[in-house]
Image 1 (tube, rainbow, N blue to C red):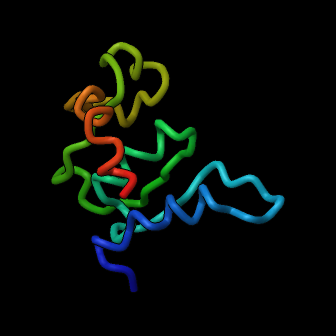
Image 2 (image 1 turned 45 degrees about the vertical axis):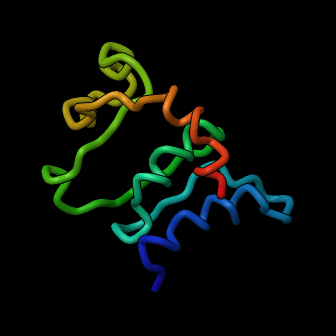
Length: 98
């Protein structure tokens, strides 16, 4: 069973997919839901679909303004309470990739 510090390697494997099957979405349980995974899947054009328990205790971040998420994810929008600091992600992109 992977630990939290190993969970981000799943994106590395997806991006290095050597098959002819395009992988666009990855579903995972609580063990695969980390801030790194949540932050990196969207910018590289992949979808992370977590099946998380106890959503009320989790802080979810959105990439844009609240209004942009009203129609896109109406049921999840109230949970997306914070906006991701994309400038901070860009500044530390090399560190995130490592």
